[in-house]
Image (cartoon, rainbow, N blue to C red; front, side):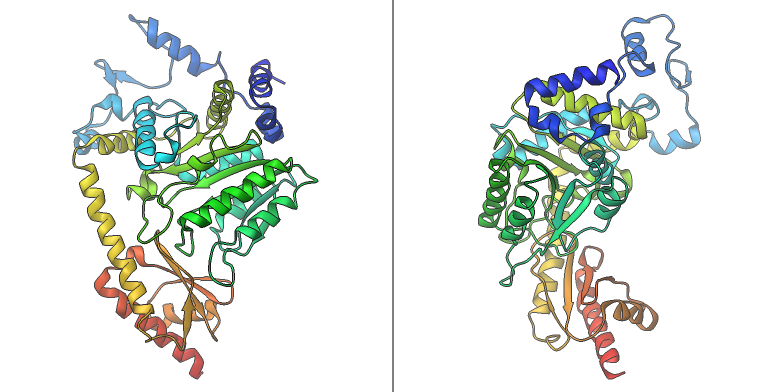
Length: 432
């Protein structure tokens, strides 16, 4: 094993042996090279004032070389904020500003020890880092039965984790914390579990209430007290889009510092929060009481980044940073939130109107981009295909009964027509 990896592992062992035990084989072997091109380039940038012939970019007249055809459309930005490679961990100022944003939006994090957010190529990349660092073949990866299908690829196919699902809802349509608890305690013989918490949930648009959140934290704490090392990744992709009574904070803050056997990891980003899906800017943040553990996890994370994408896109990091610093940012974001909330409320009013009760029920939703219908007597995929062919309406079928509707991309004035067409499609299938 590389001596740098061994050094990081020793820091983890001395800071929190349980976190070291959580690492996958790759997680133990990975490190960020201190004597490679990037570190040598960093040293040169600090001291080579005359000629710096290190990193692989081209320069001209003292700035990064660029094409006017590109720069002319980006003239508000300096070339040095667009064209050079971003650091593997992300632009330092962006990381600082995102940390401040997290603290402002999550008061429970105020007195907790957690690291600086590390920039990722959006949330999928952040989740894949969690998988690489902490999942070996056969490790239990626990998340509900209603989930984002990419979890299977990221944790199951790529890392051969053992996927453990539990029903998202109880019979009275609350979050199934007992199912989470049982799934966790079933891993006692393995001694390790990775838990994914995704609120607002994709596909249902559900965020638990405060008391349900306490039950979730209690279930995870019970597993840790039973001797199970628990990696908890909060997938906060749709954070902030809370339209009704629910938790308005990430559970990351409640889990940080809770128990030495619990490693909370916050995966979030500008992708959906700030409506910049194509920018691919996300973050991964670790919580630990030990500064050495945080430093070692950051080094291992940047090692994974270096080994896969080298670094994230510099222009999009610059764009997000400038937006976050803008005095108009919050007002503009509030205006978009109001539109999203109006759409969600309109959907709920339509579904509660009684117009469609013969065709479907629906799962609770109070946040995010989506909601799910529960069809009564037609097949979801058959309906999906029929809606495309006959009415030019696109939906997502999940299993036999569930149909996901992204109200996020439908104007409020068009929602009634959308659901009327879906209802007509159900009637067509019922009559055939």
